[in-house]
Image 1: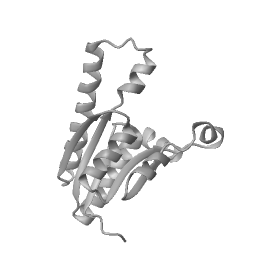
Image 2: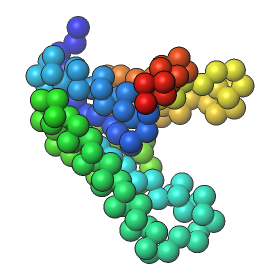
Image 3: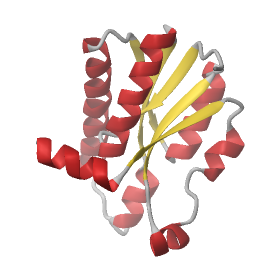
Length: 156
């Protein structure tokens, strides 16, 4: 197995993000790796979805929520014995993940992914492909399967 000394975990508070956080935390503990956690606010998508009608208050609320999600992730890691440095960015997630991974000279990036099937896969395309082309390290994609989703819903 490759020696991963510096791991960048990407967390957005979603089910897939939590799976990536769990997988990344396990690796970080096992490998005693330096750990970084990134949360990104994608204002371009948010503004596009609101037809450009976001107020300064709404934009501030998005930032506040993203910072809370970042802190939630750092706290969760800390409770499990992983010391992680939190990072926050505005921009397109793929751009910001690639920028920070390269800046940190990370050995591994861990991201969550919702597994799609059938027509949705064809329709949506391969969203992580641009990230693969933009970093010079390994990428672990933690997938959240429908069966796993049902188990977590039943446990909740």
